[in-house]
Length: 349
Ligand code: 2RA
View (cartoon, helix red, strand yellow):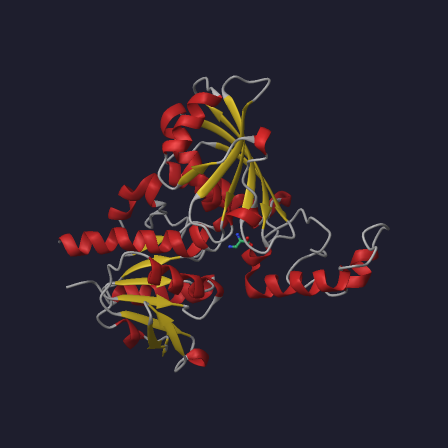
């Protein structure tokens, strides 16, 4: 019997991408049940070419479910993931509610698929999209050279803030297009007015803040990059510094990474590792204008890496530019891949 899958939050931004990913990938699932808030119950959505009616989130909705993928806000996952697990489902949760729980593995199949096997709470967490957009490439380099430090600057797309973020950027672009705005202090801010879910205008701008403010001036996004990278790579003392910046891109997060290793590195060796790493595409020929950009990467599955250089002042360090679609590998795709690892385990048992 093929396992039964529930997708919780099927109507949201990530849930929508999840349904198209489930329709494209090898079909390992029996029934796929779509679950959402009572407001969306009764709607029909297409998955695997078939119309499926959305059912309301309640305990009974998890009856007979083997794997439940959650794409919902933290507080909804915090309440309902344990309910699904208590009904016997293995939960793959894409919220921040359980990522740092020591009894919940944080899994990126290309890097630490083995961690999914030990799940005392019946819950597996999916990392935040900012970490996920670089960690497959970093895991591959770590396996060869031994990572000792990451210094990261992110260039995050507005879809990280959901549909509201996309709508805000589109509206702002319409307001500034064809004008001479962006030439005087505050002119864009005055033209744009309300900035939606962002603390400053996104059109014609970059905003050095994403997530919420935490202790000592760090943002939640910056702390996630640090804590999650350490947990996924199994390096609890890894030195990690992140500065997370929002840019006027709809979808695909980019990161400029300074990665320091235990061992000396060469660009040639790094190229070879990245070119052969599952889930990574090396795109690094700047003489021909070849490097990853969000406009080219959006809608694709892999982590794209370019601009690989050895640090001029440190033979143990590399500089890289990495792009990943934050809604695919950064969210739905990684969740689907974890689900497939569990489906294989259940089918083999
Ligand atoms: C963002 N990483 O880009 C967040 C979404 N989880 O806002």
